[in-house]
Image (cartoon, rainbow, N blue to C red; front, side):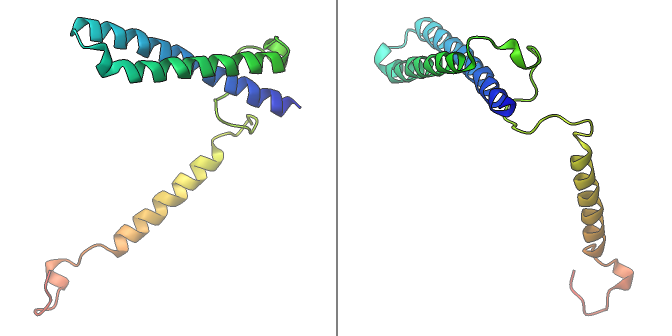
Length: 129
């Protein structure tokens, strides 16, 4: 149940950021169009799409808030973990990445060493570079 709540809170956070970005985009689009005296017909479709997306995300935000029961602070406070992940945070969060990057580095170094071109002294007289 807590994992479902965490997922909903992550979606809520993402959607709030989307709305913020879209509103900023709409404001800037209108300001730049006015500044450059652009005809509304040239940017009207972009404006309509952005406004439609704002309405969609605001509807999703309302739905998620209703589903969460109106209270967001129930699962440990406002500071959320990284958006887009379902897995809980662990004490050794980056150890897997470290191991994979170290193994990848060693494998790349060995492969690069094996593929290193021969030096001029070790080439046969008929070999082409």
